[in-house]
Picture (tube, one colour):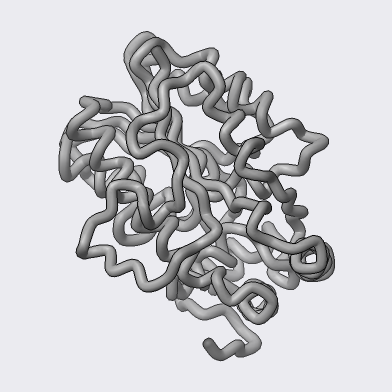
Length: 279
């Protein structure tokens, strides 16, 4: 991948009106992920950060692709086999082909989706979703994942929390520092959900990194990104599902969760994925 100096798109990221609201000289999670997936809604800082992370951890690209493929399979499972028609997608990133609303509404056209993110570039794309004309409902909250009570209060304007909801936390929890207690954030969200709701998440497995590798990756992040990542062991990731019933095949590498031959996974990753049902 080549890095240039300006934005990679003529769309939202290139608008003076939009860019005035945020600092494009520092990488952001949503734009970083967009670049990993081959998107165009990112800036030079996001691309430089991504290339530095790829150099330090070559498995990052297959992990990003496995993450995206898992999202599609999990949403299809929820909307189909599990019968879920409401989705709360926190840390959604920049909407692109195969996003939650697109997959869910293909299976269940009347699905209601609330996206949550705090990147202005994501907001600019969300505006298009709000007038997209789906037979279901797609809404967007400009909110931080570390504020679950606020998210729940605002999402209740679109979602009915007396009926089951699929709560999606895809590759976002490792971007929440330990001091913000990501486990408590998940508990707060799931405590508010009725029986029959689901938690869907992906998370990097720190057991597969050496101490030197962890410190190198954290150092790159401290220097080049506004977000500060935390590493969690498999046991710590499993704790997010406390009180929930893990759906088979359990907490497993993302590319191994109910794999679809069309996903064409080419490498094993360090990304754990799981789906849990609230009894």
